[in-house]
Length: 220
Image (cartoon, rainbow, N blue to C red; front, side, top):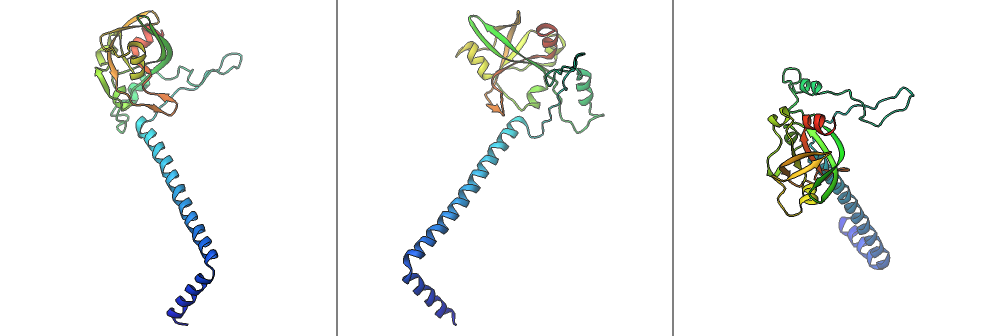
């Protein structure tokens, strides 16, 4: 049978069975649309996950200590062991010992109440070094970040996240204002630019202090 005859037979079959042909075409269209939607949703979810990873830093590795075990056998929470020290961070930051590591930012944190005048806000107070800003891929909205001198002198300074600044000072500028943390008065030297959340962590709701200040003044 020639191609022309085959085509003529197919057209005649479609004409005689219009309803069946229409239903078949609708089924094909629905199937194609379902595949397109599935691929679209999958790509959207992939893009969202990638965006969250990129906001944290796709080349960022977080090292945390394990948990402690008491004499009675009770285990503490994850990260409760004091097995990581500043000496460990310094060793990792050595270009001789670890040439492939671009930067190291040791940190310690605790959920603590901050007071500014009549305003009070509980947030995560993070003690770290001047490397934290670049390691965490964060930027400043105003002021400056903590520096090496602040760490060396246990300076009473703090950098606020965007949400923390808003909760404590509202529309007022936070830089050069003071906050009280565990009875210690600290001067706000900077405010981080809003960057949203990474997983369950709100990057905008935190307060950054020199790690020496956190260890000796606030949590020591």
